[in-house]
Length: 233
Image (cartoon, rainbow, N blue to C red; front, side, top):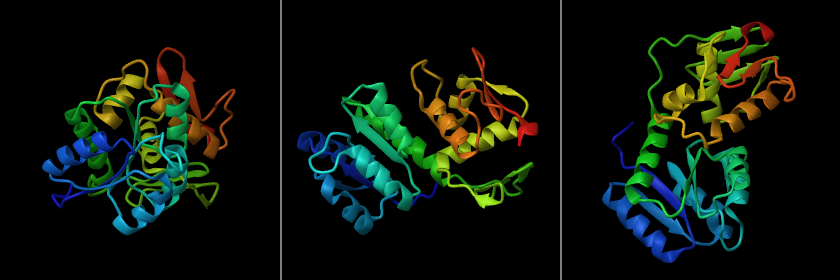
Protein backbone atom coordinates (compact mmCIF):
# COMPACT_ATOMS: atom_id res chain seq x y z
CA UNK A 1 0.00 0.00 0.00
CA UNK A 2 1.26 3.48 -0.83
CA UNK A 3 2.63 5.62 2.01
CA UNK A 4 0.63 8.60 0.73
CA UNK A 5 -1.81 9.89 3.35
CA UNK A 6 -5.17 8.17 2.87
CA UNK A 7 -8.49 9.98 3.06
CA UNK A 8 -11.42 8.76 5.15
CA UNK A 9 -14.99 10.01 4.80
CA UNK A 10 -16.76 9.41 8.13
CA UNK A 11 -20.55 9.71 7.97
CA UNK A 12 -21.72 9.66 11.59
CA UNK A 13 -24.33 11.75 13.42
CA UNK A 14 -23.10 11.03 16.98
CA UNK A 15 -21.01 14.19 17.41
CA UNK A 16 -18.97 12.92 20.36
CA UNK A 17 -18.16 9.61 18.66
CA UNK A 18 -17.38 11.34 15.36
CA UNK A 19 -14.96 13.78 17.01
CA UNK A 20 -13.19 11.04 18.98
CA UNK A 21 -12.91 8.87 15.88
CA UNK A 22 -11.64 11.74 13.76
CA UNK A 23 -9.03 12.67 16.38
CA UNK A 24 -7.76 9.09 16.68
CA UNK A 25 -7.61 8.51 12.91
CA UNK A 26 -5.99 11.90 12.29
CA UNK A 27 -3.31 11.02 14.84
CA UNK A 28 -2.86 7.76 12.90
CA UNK A 29 -1.91 9.79 9.81
CA UNK A 30 -5.25 9.77 7.97
CA UNK A 31 -7.02 12.79 6.48
CA UNK A 32 -10.57 12.65 7.82
CA UNK A 33 -13.72 14.45 6.70
CA UNK A 34 -16.83 14.12 8.88
CA UNK A 35 -20.46 14.79 7.98
CA UNK A 36 -23.58 14.00 10.00
CA UNK A 37 -26.41 14.49 7.48
CA UNK A 38 -27.09 11.59 5.13
CA UNK A 39 -28.51 13.94 2.51
CA UNK A 40 -25.06 15.52 2.08
CA UNK A 41 -23.15 12.25 1.74
CA UNK A 42 -22.97 11.89 -2.05
CA UNK A 43 -22.04 15.55 -2.58
CA UNK A 44 -19.29 15.35 0.04
CA UNK A 45 -17.99 12.12 -1.46
CA UNK A 46 -17.70 13.78 -4.88
CA UNK A 47 -15.84 16.76 -3.38
CA UNK A 48 -13.52 14.83 -1.06
CA UNK A 49 -12.89 11.64 -3.11
CA UNK A 50 -11.98 9.43 -0.13
CA UNK A 51 -10.00 6.21 -0.16
CA UNK A 52 -12.42 4.59 2.31
CA UNK A 53 -15.89 5.41 3.61
CA UNK A 54 -17.01 4.70 7.19
CA UNK A 55 -20.78 4.81 7.26
CA UNK A 56 -23.32 4.66 10.09
CA UNK A 57 -26.71 3.10 9.30
CA UNK A 58 -28.95 5.34 11.41
CA UNK A 59 -28.58 8.89 10.08
CA UNK A 60 -30.77 11.96 9.66
CA UNK A 61 -31.83 12.36 6.05
CA UNK A 62 -30.76 9.38 3.95
CA UNK A 63 -29.93 6.28 5.97
CA UNK A 64 -26.60 4.50 5.63
CA UNK A 65 -27.95 1.59 3.58
CA UNK A 66 -29.38 3.96 0.98
CA UNK A 67 -26.11 5.91 0.83
CA UNK A 68 -24.14 2.67 0.42
CA UNK A 69 -26.35 1.57 -2.46
CA UNK A 70 -26.08 4.98 -4.19
CA UNK A 71 -22.33 5.51 -3.77
CA UNK A 72 -21.17 1.99 -4.65
CA UNK A 73 -21.53 2.32 -8.48
CA UNK A 74 -19.18 5.33 -8.46
CA UNK A 75 -16.77 4.24 -5.70
CA UNK A 76 -14.38 1.30 -5.98
CA UNK A 77 -12.81 1.67 -2.53
CA UNK A 78 -13.84 -0.03 0.72
CA UNK A 79 -17.03 0.82 2.60
CA UNK A 80 -17.08 -0.01 6.32
CA UNK A 81 -20.48 0.02 8.02
CA UNK A 82 -20.25 1.33 11.61
CA UNK A 83 -23.50 0.64 13.41
CA UNK A 84 -25.04 0.11 16.82
CA UNK A 85 -27.65 -2.20 15.32
CA UNK A 86 -26.55 -5.79 15.93
CA UNK A 87 -29.06 -7.36 13.55
CA UNK A 88 -28.22 -9.96 10.92
CA UNK A 89 -30.69 -8.39 8.49
CA UNK A 90 -28.90 -5.02 8.54
CA UNK A 91 -25.49 -6.65 8.20
CA UNK A 92 -26.54 -8.86 5.29
CA UNK A 93 -28.36 -6.00 3.56
CA UNK A 94 -25.32 -3.75 3.94
CA UNK A 95 -23.08 -6.38 2.32
CA UNK A 96 -25.59 -6.90 -0.49
CA UNK A 97 -25.67 -3.14 -1.13
CA UNK A 98 -21.88 -3.09 -1.51
CA UNK A 99 -20.35 -2.71 1.96
CA UNK A 100 -17.07 -4.55 2.48
CA UNK A 101 -17.14 -4.98 6.25
CA UNK A 102 -19.10 -3.90 9.31
CA UNK A 103 -18.27 -3.08 12.92
CA UNK A 104 -20.75 -3.05 15.80
CA UNK A 105 -20.56 0.00 18.07
CA UNK A 106 -19.09 0.58 20.56
CA UNK A 107 -15.75 -0.38 19.05
CA UNK A 108 -12.23 0.20 20.38
CA UNK A 109 -10.42 2.78 18.19
CA UNK A 110 -7.46 0.45 17.67
CA UNK A 111 -9.83 -2.30 16.47
CA UNK A 112 -11.46 0.13 14.04
CA UNK A 113 -8.02 1.21 12.85
CA UNK A 114 -7.01 -2.41 12.28
CA UNK A 115 -10.15 -3.03 10.18
CA UNK A 116 -9.49 0.13 8.13
CA UNK A 117 -5.87 -0.83 7.46
CA UNK A 118 -6.87 -4.38 6.49
CA UNK A 119 -9.43 -3.09 3.99
CA UNK A 120 -6.97 -0.62 2.51
CA UNK A 121 -4.22 -3.23 2.21
CA UNK A 122 -6.53 -5.45 0.20
CA UNK A 123 -7.67 -2.58 -2.01
CA UNK A 124 -4.19 -1.29 -2.79
CA UNK A 125 -2.18 -4.49 -2.93
CA UNK A 126 0.08 -4.79 -5.92
CA UNK A 127 -0.92 -7.37 -8.56
CA UNK A 128 1.47 -10.25 -9.22
CA UNK A 129 4.11 -9.60 -11.87
CA UNK A 130 2.98 -12.43 -14.12
CA UNK A 131 -0.66 -13.12 -13.25
CA UNK A 132 -2.36 -16.19 -14.62
CA UNK A 133 -5.66 -15.66 -16.41
CA UNK A 134 -8.42 -18.23 -16.12
CA UNK A 135 -11.02 -19.55 -18.55
CA UNK A 136 -13.72 -22.06 -17.70
CA UNK A 137 -16.21 -22.35 -20.54
CA UNK A 138 -18.26 -19.14 -20.56
CA UNK A 139 -16.31 -17.65 -17.62
CA UNK A 140 -13.10 -15.67 -18.25
CA UNK A 141 -11.04 -13.92 -15.58
CA UNK A 142 -8.32 -11.37 -16.36
CA UNK A 143 -6.35 -11.19 -13.12
CA UNK A 144 -4.22 -8.14 -13.96
CA UNK A 145 -7.15 -5.93 -15.02
CA UNK A 146 -9.48 -7.59 -12.47
CA UNK A 147 -12.15 -8.02 -15.14
CA UNK A 148 -14.57 -10.91 -15.44
CA UNK A 149 -16.42 -11.93 -18.61
CA UNK A 150 -19.46 -14.19 -18.38
CA UNK A 151 -21.05 -15.43 -21.60
CA UNK A 152 -19.05 -12.77 -23.47
CA UNK A 153 -20.37 -9.88 -21.35
CA UNK A 154 -18.43 -7.87 -18.76
CA UNK A 155 -19.68 -8.92 -15.33
CA UNK A 156 -20.34 -6.25 -12.72
CA UNK A 157 -18.76 -7.51 -9.51
CA UNK A 158 -17.26 -5.67 -6.57
CA UNK A 159 -13.59 -5.77 -5.67
CA UNK A 160 -14.25 -8.11 -2.75
CA UNK A 161 -16.46 -10.40 -4.84
CA UNK A 162 -13.57 -10.59 -7.33
CA UNK A 163 -11.12 -11.54 -4.57
CA UNK A 164 -13.44 -14.31 -3.38
CA UNK A 165 -14.07 -15.59 -6.92
CA UNK A 166 -10.36 -15.60 -7.70
CA UNK A 167 -9.56 -17.54 -4.53
CA UNK A 168 -12.21 -20.14 -5.38
CA UNK A 169 -10.97 -20.36 -8.98
CA UNK A 170 -7.34 -20.75 -7.91
CA UNK A 171 -8.49 -23.73 -5.85
CA UNK A 172 -10.94 -25.12 -8.41
CA UNK A 173 -11.98 -28.65 -7.55
CA UNK A 174 -10.90 -28.29 -3.91
CA UNK A 175 -13.12 -27.49 -0.95
CA UNK A 176 -12.25 -24.26 0.88
CA UNK A 177 -13.53 -23.97 4.45
CA UNK A 178 -14.92 -20.72 5.80
CA UNK A 179 -11.90 -20.49 8.08
CA UNK A 180 -9.54 -20.78 5.08
CA UNK A 181 -11.52 -18.14 3.21
CA UNK A 182 -11.54 -15.71 6.13
CA UNK A 183 -7.83 -16.12 6.80
CA UNK A 184 -6.98 -15.62 3.11
CA UNK A 185 -9.36 -12.73 2.42
CA UNK A 186 -9.63 -10.94 5.78
CA UNK A 187 -6.48 -12.10 7.59
CA UNK A 188 -8.56 -13.28 10.55
CA UNK A 189 -10.15 -16.59 11.56
CA UNK A 190 -13.84 -17.31 11.06
CA UNK A 191 -15.74 -16.44 14.24
CA UNK A 192 -18.70 -18.70 13.53
CA UNK A 193 -21.08 -15.71 13.12
CA UNK A 194 -19.84 -13.50 10.27
CA UNK A 195 -21.96 -14.08 7.15
CA UNK A 196 -20.04 -11.89 4.70
CA UNK A 197 -18.58 -14.85 2.77
CA UNK A 198 -22.01 -16.49 2.49
CA UNK A 199 -23.55 -13.26 1.20
CA UNK A 200 -20.84 -12.80 -1.43
CA UNK A 201 -21.11 -16.40 -2.60
CA UNK A 202 -24.86 -15.84 -2.96
CA UNK A 203 -24.23 -12.65 -4.99
CA UNK A 204 -21.75 -14.45 -7.27
CA UNK A 205 -24.26 -17.22 -7.87
CA UNK A 206 -26.92 -14.71 -8.91
CA UNK A 207 -24.56 -12.99 -11.33
CA UNK A 208 -23.38 -16.23 -12.93
CA UNK A 209 -26.72 -17.99 -13.34
CA UNK A 210 -26.13 -20.54 -10.58
CA UNK A 211 -29.28 -22.12 -9.16
CA UNK A 212 -29.61 -20.76 -5.58
CA UNK A 213 -31.68 -23.78 -4.51
CA UNK A 214 -29.32 -26.35 -6.02
CA UNK A 215 -26.08 -24.58 -7.04
CA UNK A 216 -23.92 -26.45 -9.54
CA UNK A 217 -21.12 -23.93 -10.23
CA UNK A 218 -20.19 -22.83 -6.71
CA UNK A 219 -21.39 -25.62 -4.45
CA UNK A 220 -21.89 -25.57 -0.71
CA UNK A 221 -20.38 -28.67 0.87
CA UNK A 222 -22.27 -28.79 4.14
CA UNK A 223 -20.07 -28.77 7.19
CA UNK A 224 -16.95 -28.25 5.08
CA UNK A 225 -17.12 -25.09 2.94
CA UNK A 226 -17.39 -24.07 -0.72
CA UNK A 227 -16.30 -25.77 -3.92
CA UNK A 228 -15.77 -24.18 -7.38
CA UNK A 229 -16.74 -26.73 -10.06
CA UNK A 230 -14.47 -26.11 -13.09
CA UNK A 231 -16.51 -28.20 -15.52
CA UNK A 232 -19.86 -26.50 -14.81
CA UNK A 233 -19.28 -23.41 -16.94
